[in-house]
Length: 468
View 1 (cartoon, rainbow, N blue to C red):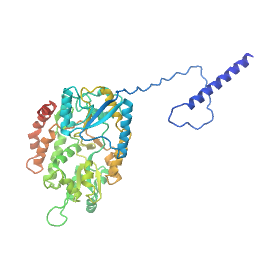
View 2 (view 1 turned 180 degrees about the vertical axis):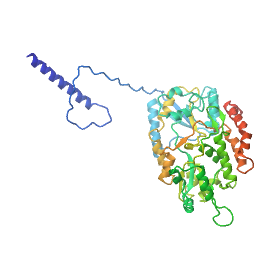
View 3 (view 1 turned 60 degrees about the horizontal axis):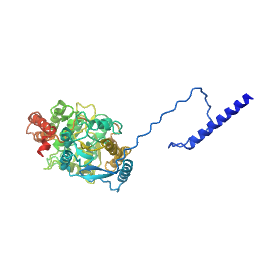
View 4 (view 1 turned 60 degrees about the vertical axis):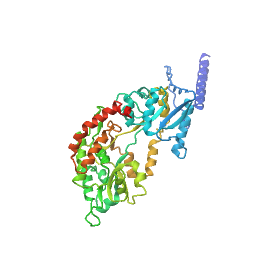
């Protein structure tokens, strides 16, 4: 009798356990579809009680009680809803407004007034915006003047990559800026495929595929493609075109050099890597004569020449394509990395300046403001969006892959930004002279290196901002 009662209790327990399991499956919240019903698994019995797993609940977003979160740019950044990306941005804004009980408002602040407006409003204890887009040329002074909120404590649980966060230290110990990501390759070499084909030369893409795209192979091609095509005794096709102040920056970077070291605060365009690049630039103009002289407008002429189909190679930025190459160049063309310099271990992307979002000192609830900014970023789709935009402007899949850095061959030279420090002005005054053969690079650099260092000190001390 006792044995029979025990058997009945066991059967009731099994049925009760099965019922609980069935109910749990019906009320689960997993997004994954339920697996197809299979044969029952063999049940393992154990006398050890199962440990209960602790499920950490996400902390609720702070309620900011309808507060207006002002985000300042030097343009109107309000998404208009006239594109898919704009529609997604509007959805993110709506989500943020509901999640934090806020209202997002975009301010259009004049470019040159942004720094002064930020500093003066902080001094008045009334920051004019919660989030401000600032070029790094202004960040240096604001950072050292104590006008910005350090953000390290608010970025411990973030989707921003570590190298991006570290770049926002601007050479200091604290993080002062917010940037969501860096596009992998913003500048390189445009080249005319027709000109290379007609000359029977391998084009830069072929040379890169062979791991043989460097200063020497670029120079060899440039010399062979600088020719007098109509026989009038004058060169009417050139290997290269460019502005001396663009070429200097790109060549220094391609040799692994920097104009400035953010960690030490030292001007470094007199380093061995930089001087080798400047001497090479000097030779391109004065010895090899493979760069077409500009006709009075260093900014516009090089791209114009390339668009006319008389230049084989043109170093420049992707931003130039829509206004300067598309609908102008009728020939086939491509986009490749800058060639490797003798000291380079990789293809390098210069990183001379970058804008960033900052939070002015005195902004309340800075921790929540950082999370609001992060929730407004399209982390999930930015690479796809970038590829789609590149498909609209680049001529072929290989060029798109290069711009996306799909093969990972390009490295950014972090830690060498010089924008806004007055360094480039000094160097450009030198390159302007030595490309004409008036002085040598070593003489010119010696004349301005001290001036460049003094310009840095002036900006970092805030003297420049006070003067303005």
